[in-house]
Image 1 (cartoon, helix red, strand yellow):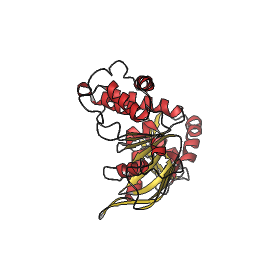
Image 2 (cartoon, helix red, strand yellow):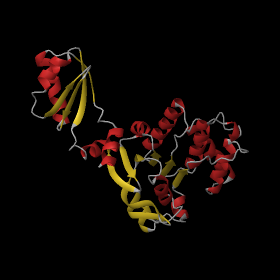
Image 3 (cartoon, one colour):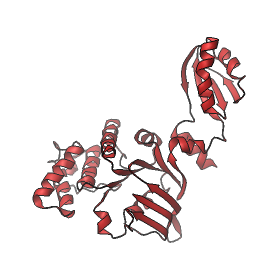
Length: 302
């Protein structure tokens, strides 16, 4: 649904994004990067708020810049509160529906449906100045989906949410994704992204470092030994057995046994057999290199 080819955007002498190429389809895709990585700039290009300096951006095969035909099928949550403090959530979402071209009666129906989707139907009568951060984020999401868009772009939507609000917001996005919508969520918080999706675009200093499923991106850094930590009541006994495996690079013994291997899949396949045949006591297996933070750190360091 979104196709970006060689897109760059300069602000004078400052580069916002630099030669970005990617495709985004249905489901949730995370736009991940530190503050200043270029996430908001790429969002603005995709939503048609600005044109790329070079390259192209196409949404539904069209240039999104100042294009009402594209806007009708796009929903956008900016990284700032969009609802004026003097309006209630219901009034704000209703006005968004009217601006999308719906009649008065249609706008009432559409806004109530959107408020119900985000779980705000019972609080929408209050003015937004009385809302918590999580409630304001839900109202922002309601205005973005009131016209039933095919593509939804959310710029840092989880900022400032407490754990409960974050979980509830993620559940709403999951339901929208199940309806076949294409959702792009920008974030600089790694564990948030990891809970939402395995598909990501990794930005750093305006450049796209990697794109795809987390497992595929992890394979890009397999030249680095993969660390695996094993909990056991007898670390030395376990270490004595795993150190003999030909694909194990090193073994460090402490309260746990940390193995470094260049063939993690082979090691994971072999470990259960080794435990059963040798009668080893293993109570836990984790990998500090299997999460997104490790992937990001490795790729940025290269």
